[in-house]
Image 1 (cartoon, rainbow, N blue to C red):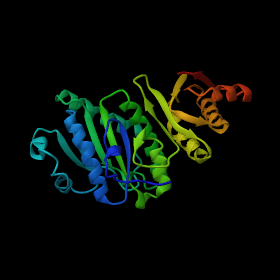
Image 2 (tube, rainbow, N blue to C red):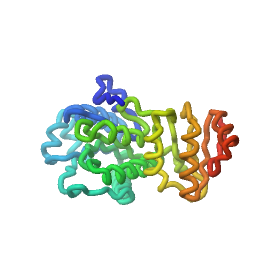
Image 3 (spheres, rainbow, N blue to C red):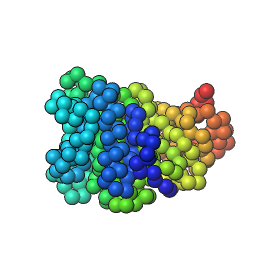
Image 4 (cartoon, rainbow, N blue to C red):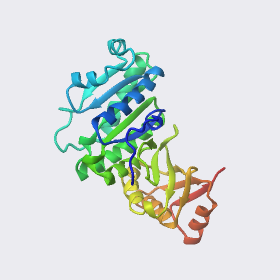
Length: 281
């Protein structure tokens, strides 16, 4: 699958939400992050850059942000180094990391900002298989938090270091970004804690979709979990069976809300348990 790091039009590095930002060179991360931060400042949010390296060096790389000195003096822009925060091969605890960002969001709002926005270069936190698995779970957890609270993030990954397969996996756990060719996006949606599924579940998703479900579904439930699939343009029987497997494993019912009449027919014909299809406009 292809990756378009640092598009010149900036369309994938702006707008609210949770972005997966693939880059090949450090300058591409800085360019995308600047656009993301400038928009956040314009919306009255506190913004932050988190990346490896010295804090002073990070600040110098972003010193051309408009009104930089004033922003930094009043705490509207901050910089944090990943160095020392996590040890080599450290595995992120999803719940703890979400609590950390929730606290920073609450602090920003209490200080009079409209919310909190962070651009994070987190390649070093997903280098090993164990790290990748844990971080994918965190991405889903924090995405569901973002759906209900004024926190937004750009998560940046170095493609030459990680490889396209790993970045594609991470991109599938984000609603937006600059990674092209990923067949679907599984992410948080709405203040009620629903989950959204967009794109297509075809042969290209045969291996990727079960992987994403295994990292996201442990955070679902109990009871019924609404999967908003109004923007899912295609799902085959394999996709429905993967959802049924998760429902059985977690002891939950997955309510698939879709515009596609075919999904309900397949569930009925195949006798798929644990998945209830609700057709919506």
